[in-house]
Length: 121
Image (tube, rainbow, N blue to C red; front, side, top):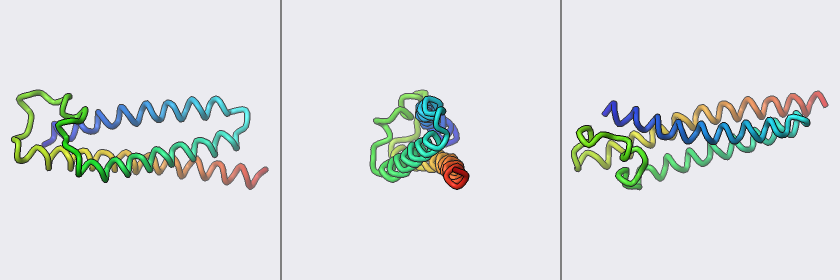
C-alpha cells in the first residue's frame, strides 16, 4: 500500500507543482500592481483548492486503473484485483485532500496579503 501512496503523491504533486508554477508566473507578471497580483493569486489558488476537492470526491467513483497512478506502478507491485479499486481510489482521495489543504493555506496567505494591501492603500 505504501508504494501506491508514494506514487499517488508524486503524480498529484507533479500536477500541483505545474499549476503552482502557472499561478506564480501570473503573479510575477502582475507584480507592477501588488494588490492585483495578490488578489489574482488568491483567486487562482482558491480555484486550485476547489478543483482538488472536487477531484478528491470523484476519485472514489473513478476506476484507478485509468489514472496516471496506475501507469506509474510496476506490474509486480499492483494490488490484487478485488482490492485494487478500493486501495487506488482511497489513496488518490487522500493525496488530493492533502494537496488541497496546502493550496488552501497558500490561498489564505495571499488573501491576507491582499486584505492588508487594501487596508494600507
